[in-house]
Image (cartoon, rainbow, N blue to C red; front, top):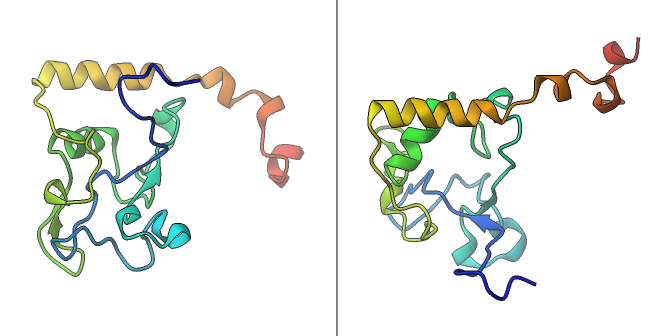
Length: 143
């Protein structure tokens, strides 16, 4: 079905969020697909979520470790996150297991604001307030 894609479609990606040991390690309780496959190359690979209603889903990343969309853009622009101190310290942009799609980029302040505006435009408040799509287990919404 996807045989004419320019690249092989990959469902899970390592975005360089961590690189604890300089060899691509993620926190022990947060290793991604590795937990299932036990393949070392799957360290830090997680499924990318939809961008629909992205402005409403903070905090971001699989572990909620990035607070704002602005910080998410900074993370991808840098090609990975650098954590300077503590037990999670490491340079994510140098993670050897990082996806080839996470290479970094430069944006002007205006381009960053335009990207934020685009991401925010993917939010549909009417959808989020439609009772037909409410959480059926939310007792407050049922009343």
